[in-house]
Each structure stands twice: as structure tokens, then as C-alpha cells.
Image 1 (tube, rainbow, N blue to C red):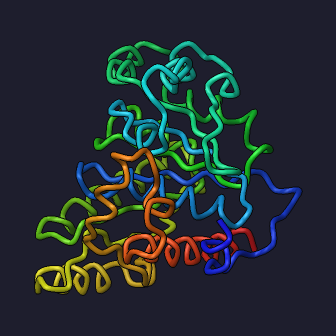
Image 2: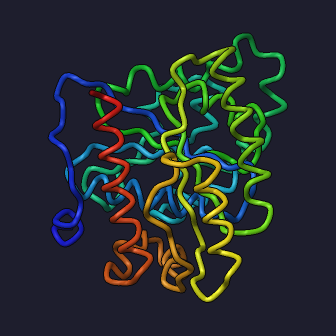
Amino acid sequence: MPAIAAKIDSPAADAAAVARVLAIVNQKGGVGKTTTAVNLATALAAVGKRVLLVDFDPQGNASTGLGLTRQARRVTSYDVLMEERPIGEATVETAIPGLAIVPASVDLSGAEIELVDVPRREFRLRNALAGALTLYDYVLIDCPPSLGLLTLNALIAAHAVLVPLQCEFYALEGLSHLVRTVDRVRRAFNPTLDIQGVVLTMFDRRNNLSDLVAADVRVHFGAKVYNTVIPRNVRISEAPSHGKPVLLYDVRCPGAQAYIHLASEVLRREQGSRA
């Protein structure tokens, strides 16, 4: 993917470093969370980063978006979480060099209830990832659209949070609730957890509301909001049905170009975090 790599400003890798774990979180569905997870993972792999995408959403859309059939998901994130299977057993290499995925299945939808009586249930994912962190530069966790035990596991396992935020009327209200949750997790379980950034998605330049929401979010969250905005784009919507990230489906479309720019911003912020 040289055409993608040439456009992404990538700092040199630190061979001694363990993976940075980023949880991609929004408690609201349909905001571009999985699309962001898949395409950001693809863009990072395109510049030579070793990337593991953990599909932690029972819908399994990230797995589908990377071309994994249901039959190919023999060991899943459910098995890693509930049966403590080694994460290496669940890891599947994708068609994208440098990008692997831990797929999800519908079994994960019952994990919230099954975890209730499990000791140290909040730390299951962090423990599972511990043995794999030296194998990757980045681990991205595609969280379910809720703030239950699955998302709590992701927040405890993560170093930072990336929030896709749809440009709509109720966006700020939902984001404020998520920020409070991150604060609680930081105080109780994970003192280094931070919000790496907020990315505005489904931005429609023809709609004044998109401009108003974007302006409000930037006023409230300042530098936490990425400069890159992800536009509404039909090619982004079409790509999952072909089992491809939009960066492979149509790299020249505005949506793919936006995710390339987002990856550059993420890498610059990560360079600052490591420093």
C-alpha cells in the first residue's frame, strides 16, 4: 500500500516499546466507530506498524469489514475473554500486511451476564493482551455501543481512548457522559487512561448543523478534537459489503483520504505521548 504510506507522516518505531493500546469507544451506535477502527488500523499497517485489531463488539462488524467469514472465526474474542484462551489462538492475519484481527462472534453478547460473578472480571481483557503487547506497535479495540462490562474491560486494558463523534444534535451530551466514565475508570482502575482524541464523523458540509456541532465540540474539548473530519461518503458505506476497508476499496475517495490524514494525526499524538 505505498500510495497510502507515502501520505502518512510516521515517526520511527521504537523497537524496545510495547504496543500502545487504543480503545475506540462511543456508547452510541451508528457513529462510525467500527469504520474508524478498521480504516485507522489499515492506515497504521500501511506505514509499517504492526497492528492488532480486537473486535470486541458482538455484532462482529470489524471482522466482516476485513473480509472474515463467520466460518473463519473459529476462536474469537469471546473465547479469549470467557475461556481464557491465549490471544494468539484467536489472532487471524488479514489480507493487509501487518494487520491481524481477533474476530468477534455473537457469543460475545452473553458475556456481560456471564462476567457478573467472575473474580476480577474488569481485568480479563488486560490480562489476555499482556502476552501480546511486545508483538505489535498498536492494539486497537473496537468496543460495543454501550458502557457495560465489555467496554469497561477495554478501558482498563487501554492506554488511551479515541472517540468517534457523529455531527448531530445530541453529540455533546453523549460525549460528556463518556468523559465522566473515562474519569471514573481512571480513578478506580487505570490511572494512566486518557482521551487521545475526538474525531468528528459523518460530517456533511451541506448541512449547517454539522458546522454548528463541530464548532461546539471544539469549544468544549479544544485540542482533543482532531483537525481531520470524516465526511459522509458513499464509498465508506459500500466498502464493508466487499469485505474491504475503504482505503483498499477506493483510496482516492474523500473518505479514504480523510482516514489517511487521521492516521497521521494519531501517530503525531502518539509520538508526543511516548516522549
